[in-house]
Amino acid sequence: VSPLASNTAPQRPAHGSAAVIEEITAGLLARDAHTSPKFLYDSLGSKLFEAICELPEYYPTRTEASIFAAYGADMAQAVGDGASLIDLGAGNCAKAAALFPLLKPAQYVPVDISRDFLLGAVAQLQQRFPQIEMTALGLDFSSGFELPDSVRTERRVFFYPGSSIGNFSPEQAVTFLRGLRANAGADGGLLIGVDLIKDHAVLDAAYDDALGVTGAFNLNMLRHLNHLIGADFEIDQWKHVAFFNPALSRIEMHLEARCPLTVTWRGGERDFARGERIHTEDSYKYTRQSFVTLLERAGFATTRMWTDTDTWFAVIHARA
Ligand code: AVJ
Image 1 (cartoon, rainbow, N blue to C red):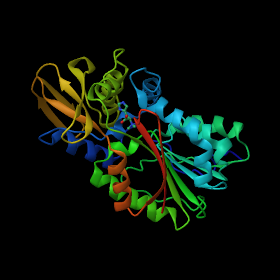
Image 2: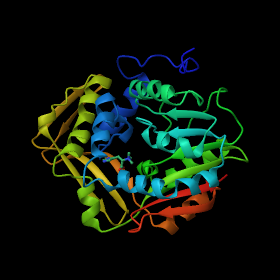
Image 3: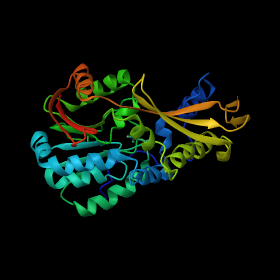
């Protein structure tokens, strides 16, 4: 039996569903055009994100990895073994896999919107860890989700590394975390990675690297939109813009029109003036205290927090 047999979700359709087309259309027609960062992740987008994680400027992945390496045993003690580990935005599953020898989960449930990319990763992982029951879920969890019955209800631990929580506004993050808490059950928990506020030049460089990989990652969203909604975005008419907005404590990523242009898609059309932008991503940064407060608002109680020596990044265990 394939480890993925329990995943009965249909194959991703060739184009976006009506709901996806509607969602993207609404964002593109808004006065300040915007799109959800989840559309950054088609198969190429997931690979470009993997490349970002190797960049010298992109400190979150390696800083978080150093925290896992230094304190993994403590984390395993806080989480307890035999858990159902639900990995949100699992991507290539590498972070969870590195912790398996310490965490010893009974079940592993990676969830990612980039379904084909995820299924490839899990098929390989199941070979390496045949004793862990694996159920891959190729779905968009950003607006809340229900776990299938195949996910054990005992000791559910949500694993949400990488500071992906930063894609939500603080208000949205509280709502999302409340949903996790409700799904986790009384004996459940959360192991979450959070990026911390630091020197603005460090933040800016992490999202606008010299090699231009983050720019390619951002621009690739236009290719993905062309596919999803039958749009005619021309990549070379757009420019990657990213900066830290200190008033809102977030990195903003935008795509900026290099010239006046018109975009047409199934169900819509819009003119962009030169310099006009599409807001594609926010990545909120927290202090240790502001994030603990946010967890409390969601009903979680922090049990432990681990950071690197520069306090650039934090990993937190909280219980439901
Ligand atoms: C995957 C959401 C954590 O916000 O740092 C990286 C995505 N965007 N470079 C982040 C991202 C541009 C990343 N997260």
